[in-house]
Image (cartoon, rainbow, N blue to C red; front, side, top):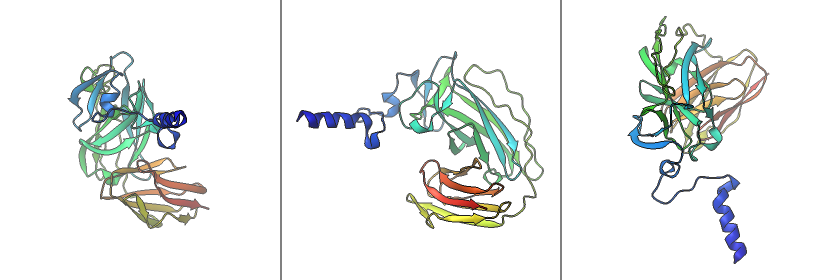
Length: 280
């Protein structure tokens, strides 16, 4: 009987697969259970996530820049201070200065970010003037905040033939609530067509057609066309290319296979293998 109790107790600590989990009482959320870090406010960030306020001194900060990609869209960089990305513990309790970020276009979520770099395809940005926003979150999905305001950075971005991102100067902001610093970002035009196209569908946690290999000659361009039934992010290993996958909409990433090897194409959220690119 004692042995059985010990086994059950051990399972409660590690959870399935031996990985530590954050447990809380029935009827409570991770947000309420991990309130020991900072102060959990009733206020929300506008997308339904509660604010977790911390003192300005030593608080997370973020700045956002965008540069045109030579093939398609823009490469975004998040420069963070007093913050580290922790993709392995997302969904757990809030830890000081740790978590992930959300990327929004005009208030609409495009992707969850687990690192400082993200490729934004031109196809994801309609023609015209827009505002990009990145916001920092704790592992329990509460938004880090200072003085009642979420820790975020904004950046104006204009898309269209020959368009250029508007320049702006960051206003004075309290520590932990930095404003984005944009750079000129011309919209890529005249992009050559792809040599190969791979069309995939993700539905109910399964990939159609089943994951296989796409063989390419070095220097060929491939278009990855993916439709997912849930919002996710596509990632091409080895090329460090990412693509936001809006729920129910086809998204396309075009890249040049300029390095030889075997490269996996996966999704971040659902952790599915979509295909493998074999470049010779």
